[in-house]
Length: 201
Length: 255
Image (cartoon, rainbow over the protein chains, first blue to last red):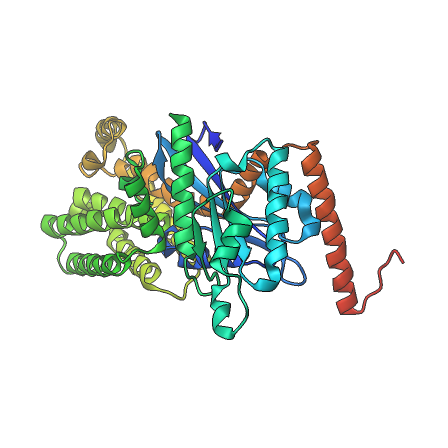
């Protein structure tokens, strides 16, 4: 359930970009940030490690209007993908309202995607969150690598590995080039906001 | 986000439209052209006022200002420039020839800075805020000067003050223009001087505020997950320092 600040009459919607290390979660947020209308632009918080990896999480907030008389604030987070940072990932997941699972479409990353999805299931279980009740979007990232001759997983394989149970809406995307990045975001916001609205009613 | 967008609950279609506004959905170009035209009209009105200060020219200025204000309500920083201009315009409208002579100069300066902020692609948000703060300070200085001059006028003026003060308590945007100089000292202080300062605090503290809010959302101290994450973070920081030392060729003081 979204966090409600009764004093400010504000509804904070938390959307987390989850997925394997180096899958393109931060690149998604970077692209979103760069695409935002300058007049509405907010600050994005991003803390990187020595090797330009996400240290704690990335954070990008913005307002989108009202629901049930409350100002709606969308808060986008990423998690650190590296396996060893599980406590941080778990922490970021707390209070999540919507999820984008950013899978790496490269063939060699197949196992990492599956492990990351299993890790997501486990971490959500700790908060008694059933992923099947949560708005989720699957994003199969790095499709642009196909042009460079890098072997990619087929859509069927990705769906079968990651989405056969969930049956979540999915997008083939290139976070680097921006293909389907905004579409992914719009879809998860729509699903999440409408889900919250239904809960509140 | 414009105020018009906040008046009612979101339907899926409206949500889609709003997201298009935020991330661009084909409307951006025509909107910016419209804004450019409005800015040009306002500039003409300012120049006309400089040439001839009359009821008509001030009215035209305030009218152009209202159009631009509606169009820019999503940008707090620019909206605050417009609030200062509006306060000055309404004061001039009421006092006419008796208005403090510096007012029209300040109005031109504020407009020039507003135009710079609105049109420049090179200025950072921080630089724009600095320009706004400078304008607020100049506005406040003029406000103080008018207050001092008024106090100097003595008892004859007090009867007029009393009437104006009463009307300022019944403030509304439309009636503000019919008020005496109190408009710029009291009611408009809250409208133009306090509000313009708001972005200075809200913009800078926004992230910290949001992080605080999100950390509250994430958990409280003593929570097992939080403690684990903190330990994890400490370990990462240690690793980062260790790599940095290695890069700099500095030995770990503990070793």
